[in-house]
Image (cartoon, rainbow, N blue to C red):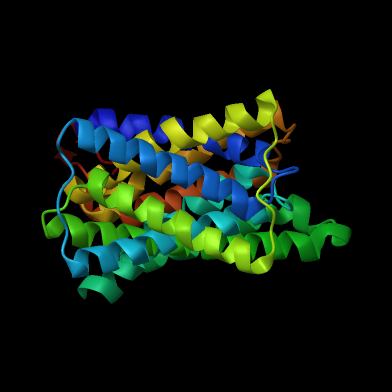
Length: 300
């Protein structure tokens, strides 16, 4: 079961970056996010009500869902979609792969877990790898400011994603399943962004073409309803640190899609950077070497 969830998450989220890029256009970024998670939340609620699996929650559960909605389904996507205006979607996926490091750091903050030396070493390798990956863009001085801004937003979005992982882990320890908490979290996140749009005067337009509607539906059903449910189920089954290991493989899928769809050019520094980032993430979880966990072989 874990292996299926693992592979499903990698394949879906490794390809959603292009769909996110296709969302950019007539419809404002926050409005696109509202559409995505309002629809995904309604679909989840419909499934839960029809199957009678919607779990009751107390006030604390709703408060955590509200925070989860802010982190997972609001701020981080604002960061990612805005960053995609300046940096390639595949490179954003590589930044996102550092969620393994953020999860280790946040586990210290949320749960008081000690950070091992291998985590610090993996973090150093990850930062070095990111520098190598972005070197082709950073070397072009005309785009350096935008590139740095995009990198900063992507890192901020990844930190919010990691915080959402911790909140989901807390909910699952309290007996709440991801489908229920995701349904509430998505609706809360969409509602907060809707209020922001209304107060900011951002119009709720729609782009009625195959590109926008197709990418929206891909993000709603595979990307949100299936992807988030699969991933956060892994967080509950394996813990946030081990579940985040699957993000190591996202760049392999995303950069290859980016090469075909966006014309991303592989360079020697980029290849070395990709290997370095992945090696850093693997080093973070070296403590699980030679261990088979519920059908998943964890890298040595």
